[in-house]
Length: 408
Ligand SMILES: Cc1cc2nc3c(=O)[nH]c(=O)nc-3n(C[C@H](O)[C@H](O)[C@H](O)COP(=O)(O)OP(=O)(O)OC[C@H]3O[C@@H](n4cnc5c(N)ncnc54)[C@H](O)[C@@H]3O)c2cc1C
Image 1: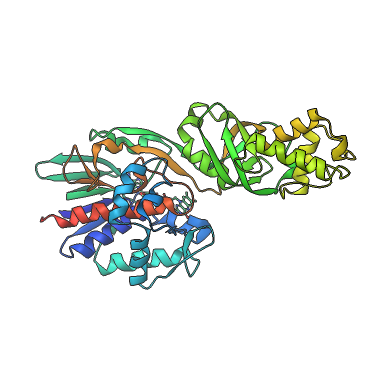
Image 2: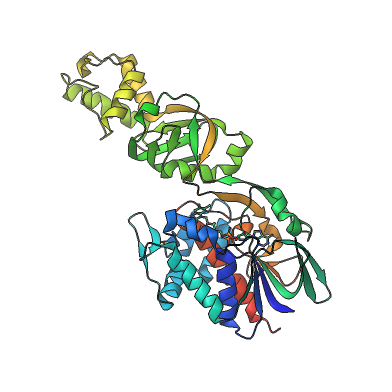
């Protein structure tokens, strides 16, 4: 009989096991991992550098980066947030650094540093690990659990931490469903938009620092850098928007119109005044040859072409009809979107274990005592930038305190 069985040898599972062991060294802990590899997502994360967390040390601000789980995390971050994690790594000899955009990495720039630390800590605390052990069933009998793997092995446990991550395939959650826990439909988050027409694909690689992207006919919009790709639209504004609108876009089957303002969330009347002022100040200047608002020349040329402005046209000769069209294309450039593309292979699951059935102070099931959850298996997911790992560390830490805190 193990005191604690952790299901899943990923980020949340390892961090949870280590934190339980650190708090209560007497406990017998076992990690069951389905595959023959431990911490495989940590390994490939952040392009092999592992974007461990985000440089945001304010619980409330940090929680705003989570389309699902914001309310719960706002509370949990008061117990364990990014700063606590940075301090924990430092106490173990792993320094983290923040990049300009706030993403934090180990100074080694290698995810192996994180993996080595976790494996060292697990060994130090005598955590037992079994690979190729896919859990298929949990039965709760008097006072303890019986866990069954796909190969038929049975393991007894007093407490369980479920940390199996996110899964696009709903069947992966069956053994949790069988315990009476509702699962919110798992669907993808963090993706880029595929344009139906390739009329911008010759601008592949062109980026603007501050676009405002809206999904027509919905309340969803995001501001930030935007990149034109050969398949459509990408960059932080689009990836963030994909996370916040994940459920809505799934319902639309990824067929929708994206409206792009290349100059941020600017009022139409303000832009009109800007254009008219420019026209009266530089009447002899060629419109197409002199990009405004620091927009890249290739993009400006395209916007002028869409507004049917000929190459030689000067501002003084610009008809109001064309000025209006230019304004329209600067502020509401329409892209018909059909489909999505995974962002750098980095995807997270929107959906998972429904949070209403979880005791949010301890991450314990409200239905089954001594059954805990942590990480992406929960219906919690964040924007890209280290937020998904931070949710895994925090939920695992909080669950670990409750697991290790009780007398067993
Ligand atoms: C390519 C890629 C790059 C990413 N980069 C970043 C990044 O840089 N920063 C960031 O914050 N987030 C990143 N993410 C997201 C982040 O990796 C996940 O949110 C995080 O790993 C979730 O941790 P977890 O422990 O909940 O799940 P996981 O890390 O997925 O671990 C779950 C583990 O459980 C195992 N398992 C599943 N089912 C069973 C079962 N039935 N029995 C036993 N074991 C089971 C799985 O094999 C897996 O090892 C990235 C994701 C991807 C795909």
